[in-house]
Amino acid sequence: MRIDIISVLPEMLTATLDASILGRAQARGIIDVAVHDLRDWTTDRHRTTDDYPFGGGPGMVMKPEPVYRALDAISDLHPDTPMVVVMSPQGRPLDQALVHDLAAQSRLILLCGRYEGFDERILDRADLEVSIGDYVLTGGELPALVLVDAVARLQEGALGCTDSATDESFAEGLLEYPQYTRPAVFEDKQVPEVLLSGDHARIAAWRRRESVRRTAERRPDLLVHAHLTDEEREFARRIAEGETTHGD
Ligand code: ADE
Image 1 (cartoon, helix red, strand yellow):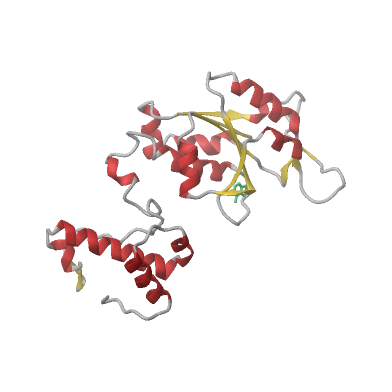
Image 2: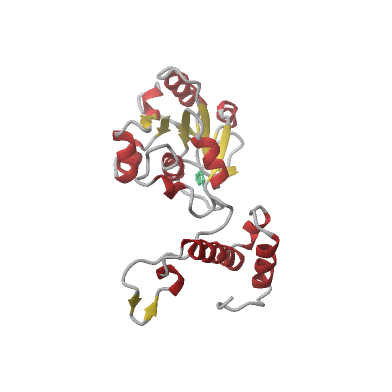
């Protein structure tokens, strides 16, 4: 998968992209990420990428010309047609379903804004606007890194263990079950006995039930789209209404 990122703060991106699983995925050729400085497509002495908003008001607006030139030039760097994604708090909220859709693309171009916003004509070049949450950051760089991280780890071979990307929060529309490692007793806190039993069917059943419990307690909104049996749905309903205790 090829990802091009356009930003006026490229150094903010490169340090993170070269670290950890993202760096390894790049080194192994699983993802090919290129960071571009938007200022390379300015034509004035000051390398200006923003300007005052028509109609007045606070803040600066990202100019369209450098962005158009950057998108034209960067599109030509690779044979695949890119999906152009603009990082914006006005965009579609990023969730695991959208991450899966984006991870299936062969090529993305991510555009990061810094300033109050984009000249609306820039958005004519976008296939999608994406927000990472209902809060406003100083720019699209951190959101772009979030998106790249989430998408990269779904690529074949990016994670050490192939199971880890599927058996996790949101894969089933549920939060993840509690996890424990050694020691079995720590500061008088005992790991649930079932996890030490070696009985894989019982363990799977316990984990599933704890996932449902957690989701009902913490994120009942997710249950609307989760795939639950009738019995699980009834269990979730009782938890949401505060009818059950932890022993259930
Ligand atoms: N740019 C600034 N805030 C953002 C957000 N929450 N999501 C995506 N891009 C942004």
